[in-house]
Image 1 (cartoon, rainbow, N blue to C red):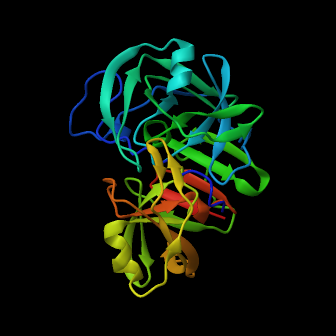
Image 2 (cartoon, helix red, strand yellow):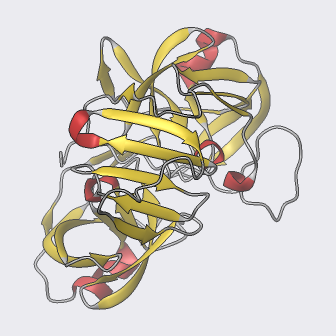
Length: 299
């Protein structure tokens, strides 16, 4: 776990892509136009960029980019400079897109084709936003975010020890032949026990801390525990400077033995839950994320 890495989590709340749809649908419930490229009778892996968050190399209209697999984003997003280089037109301006550091301006683009070689292709409008500077090597920066509209129907097999990833339709990957832990994952929420108290957490693979806890909930869970200053957190909306951390907090997820992890306090920015579970919980193990089956399998 690298404290200097960014907390992406765009939290693109209540914003639609493409044609008008029912206001009762959440953004991630609106389908993306997906095509799977790998054979259905075998698992084909794609290299995973070495990082504490799940990064892959992709192409946008033939240009190589780095993309983040981000359950913390309610929409697919593209970096503003890339949208301009590609000549993507503005369908609708967005005066307020919520991020953990505050709102930013953006716009909904015309359709772009993003492809992870040998895995899948998504052909959709994106939200163009400022991105934090995240190096992926080979001169690439993170310029695309695959959010829940893309991920919600997928089975995603991330083999962290061997730095590889595979994408397929929901239900394609199952861990039946291997010993594993199953974690219930419903509406991008996970239930657990934090410091002896029940907790519901939003899953955000775009942040590499184990836990982010907002101001209002911090005292409730960690009363009497010593906190210390934490490194600033870079986000799409700017840098969160006034952060604190508590080491060795007790967390139980999915019936596991207790985990002792670091929790970082952040401002209350309108997340659906006061506690956010980050990718640090999973990044040392092979794991399958399957939102369609409402389950996470950890080996």
